[in-house]
View 1 (tube, one colour):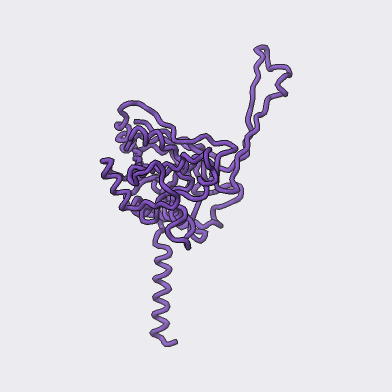
View 2: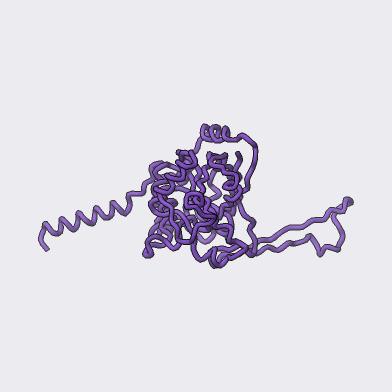
Length: 310
């Protein structure tokens, strides 16, 4: 191979390496571990609080239990333990009795938040953090959910059943920038920096009715839609599906492509199995979103119950 050919190959390799790493360091700095949470501020909280007009609250989390459908092999088990056998001598002169509970479960079951350490690309995660440097079997030493501040901001709900004219979208139905923009215009809402964006697809109605179908696929966010929302600097994106993104995917060669786009490349959090039904029923487009996630040390994900207030 001649000198010019080698130069061309070397140039191609350098360009390829640059493309492969153009998503880090983060725009919030090489040491940042919070990602899009950096878009939040006290001023954003005050603005979001002004959306509260009726005081009505909505719980966005579902009940998590042994029959909650989940990505295999995730499971849930709870054992109630009494301080004695339930018939023994109570404690103290006031005869105090009580119960404790012992839980064995995966964090990624039911309504959940995916932290930035959940999915990456070729073992590289948000801001160029490599698995061997922060992933331990006793917990993450970086990017764990317990390090996150509360997420209190403006929430936006886009009702995609309204856009597609059906009570429930079919598995494999993708919505991207075109559909997102159209439904936002229809609802008269603009997505802004630091917002939490939720999608209602009707898919959650299958839980407890046909769990197998619920887990076999889902309607959801496509790659173009994920990039579009990332360009708006939202802090988190969620839906009533179990993985947010459309399944089967738009490209069968790609595995869960939306997850690393949002988590690894843009530091945007993912909210799964959000119960959006009551918000959609009340035709709510924007609201105050409040999430104080549990602080389990080193956790990748967490079961959550965010609250919407309008």
